[in-house]
Length: 476
Image 1: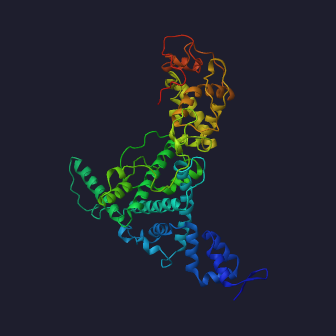
Image 2: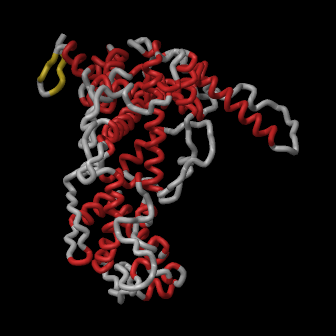
Image 3: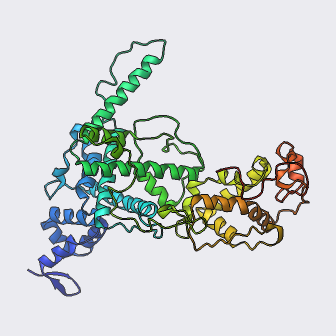
């Protein structure tokens, strides 16, 4: 029977049903049934089928993995510890038999938004450096998403202690003055935890375990990139923990293009979290997969093809593929060479001039905070510099071309000093008299008064210091 949807328009109920079932998310569904009684009545007649259809539209073919992760958060984890054994198999979340609560729907929407951001970043770094939105095809996207939803689930179980040995918090209070026993117990519990994760992953086919391992590597690499880009942390492998990386904050930071603070926040740990990939590899070893296959760090299990895989650097001709940096992805340099490391590429002894390096660091940090990234601005300005006389380095750079990381570092060695000299004048800094010994001056490295009195952003005109010229910097 046709139902009125307002303004005298009547639609058959089956048409309304199809309209609701084709909506892209739960917010739209909620709005639709609130503004039309006809829509509301049809939804009330078939709530489960419509809600599951919307979930499938929102998540795509990886819905069983996403729903399982959301189910754990809202149905398994509380009030008990959320043991891994409490989690239903993925097969339960195929079809319409499982219960989709409002809370689970909200979590699925959160997942969908986060995974879209992460897939875009994965595509930029591994599939096509020329596109900031994902160009993964349907099969590649499905592989990536089901793997990352499994990662989310394993992270949540780990975080709630669901993989911990049940006797790890026993009441045994015997202690030993030697702390070695405590370390041995920690190692034993860590091994038991990894075994528990391996058992949890036993039902995953080998081909999908390889996808899972590749996603684990991507997640860890993305976390390291964010720490270097926005916290300026150069070395972050400082220990071991059993909680893997939480991918949802990674996505949030990609959207903001920053961390909340220049300090390392509490939810960012400084450890290499390979517990999930190690557990998956253990399962593959038991399936007689060779070590060579396990140690292959390529993305061949997710990606069918890579755009521009054999593209070469515009300066040196080296094959760089998706690792080349150009107009679309030059901001990735933020996490590949930190601001501190960029200052170390200054020529001669300038990296040891604290006044110069600190001033550059402060300015680049300011640009980063204002523009949510500095490298695109600075690199393009250095490439556009018109150099004459003794400053001419004979190089032809173009911001429309792509270069390997080593050549970009060479650009910094050649022109960062010259760029900073011009930038200081733009900022209204005083024009100081040039030091005779320029960037090779030894005195500036240990006498602050001399370092601030004279300009050392210039070539030496005398002295016996090593004649280290721009382009022959100190950091490889």
